[in-house]
Length: 392
Image (cartoon, rainbow, N blue to C red; front, side, top):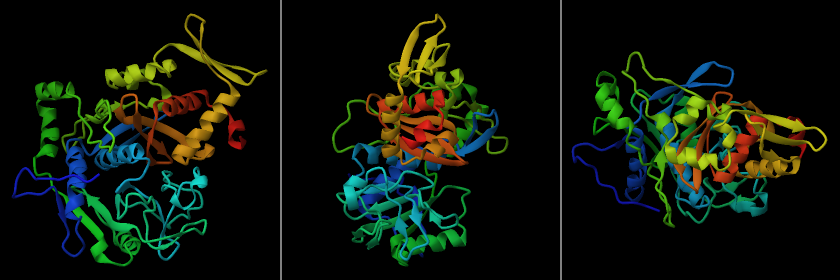
């Protein structure tokens, strides 16, 4: 889907392409600018609390852009003009996009891998440009004319490589040179776009620290996410409340955000009422006091609430089936699932899809998954169901 875009002010544009490189085509600029304008409403970083009690910082603006695009991709079954953070294997000429291994039955028309560390990557030879624009949305391949890692041939479907730089971001020379290679050595196919805060959103976020009344009133407003689909969705998409932190540019006065992975009560309470109700249907253990017990004889796990009642039961077969579906939809290996130390819902489309940020060895993975898959993923993380599933 392509959208028409008009700037609010004719004297300022949100995306300012560097003149020595190419430009975002007019038919696509509205889509990209729309995502960026929403991202400017959020602070640059927030502090997140991991499973071991330590904290780290997450860059939010690029995460917000990627999350909205990933939701669009998911709703379109990845037949989409725009692709967020495609991983490229830089050890080949031309670089090869990593494709999903969870849908090999689809052959050459597999989607790109969502794993930030795809199987077979070599350290130092991996790049993830912000956005790839493709020529034909009916073709999932996001690269140049070459073969994929399984030897299947592909025609050139790469329209633009887009790298966005929010205020304060840098572009190292080696990164820039790799992006030129991904763009077939053509500067006209590489877009380096500086993000301009035309409407003063970043300043308003910073000033919210000194204006508590404005901060409290704005926090009650649900921020709609710019999620688009060819088939109308019944419920609008919203960014979750945890993104609405504030910073003053110096002391970065943001709260710590608890991890949904741990089922932290404070983290759950920060989600919208709609999302909490959505999760209660399938992940009640996030909200109630109780514990998981394992039946060794049947290799099943049961959630027992504080009254001693069995509420939810997961059999080994059920966990294996859920794990296989998660593998297919996220491309994560079981070893990586065990390494997830923080996770948070970014966008929800109630009853349809959740976009979740997962931290794996310091890198944020953005995945869009269904309600059922989200509940299964949370159950697997909560149960910590040993390595037996790895060989399943």
